[in-house]
Image 1 (cartoon, rainbow, N blue to C red):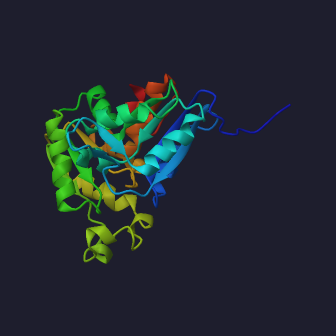
Image 2 (cartoon, rainbow, N blue to C red):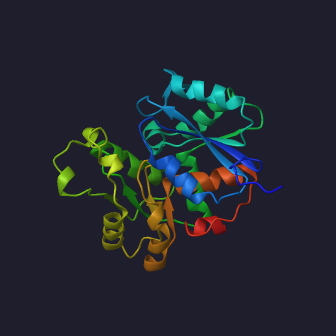
Amino acid sequence: MTHQADNWGWRARIGMFIVGNEAVPEAEWWAMVPPASGVSVHVARVTARAPWARWRADRSGVDLEDDVIRGCRQFAGMRLSAAVIGHSSSSILGGAGWDEAVVGAMTTVLAAGTVATTNGLDSLAAMRSMNLKRPFVVFPAWFNDATVEAGVAYYTSHGVPPAAHLRYDPGRKWRDVPFSQLYPEGMGFEQEIEPLYAQISAACPADADGIYIAGTGFRCVGIIDVLEQDLKRPVLAANQVSLWHCLRLSGARVPIGGYGRIFDV
């Protein structure tokens, strides 16, 4: 009997928490996961504001937002290998120790054996694996000044101070739209990767030893390979590093080509 691939996760099932109104994370993960790889991706959507867990008054731990608790409970019955908070802003705005505190809180709700992680931890693990010390960090257009500043501080505090940073310019049509309104007014579904390639290529400083593109809602994995070829440096991106790290945490060695050197590590 012959049969078609059905994306059954016999090798690894990965649960991903993403922003409720975003389409990019799922699209990019499924683009990167090879057909018939034995890896499946399962999504829980979150509508809470960042960060997706709140520090208690005494900072003894964090309380997960309701959507995250609900998702963890649903994931608990799905025999997941790993689950990730796929939200760069939460890690960036959570502050020192937030990622680790969230992993601890998730672990109490997820099924035994499911490894928890965050996009922040994934990016740091990937930077260490690629031996990046001074990355050029690129932020989405919808990150306001405070979030960009917090992003630079986040990587600096974790020992990878950016050589420089860039907030993507989405073009004339969007320049007068407030940061908070870019997604509600449709920019998230009109993202173009060619201008992003051009801006990164033009702005990347000579002393940057790699590029990191933050933001899981930021469409970009389609240009990782060409950027690496043209800039002769590793290129990391939010959805890419989370997929890579979740596969590693799951013990699933899946060959992935065309989406960056990180998958060769």
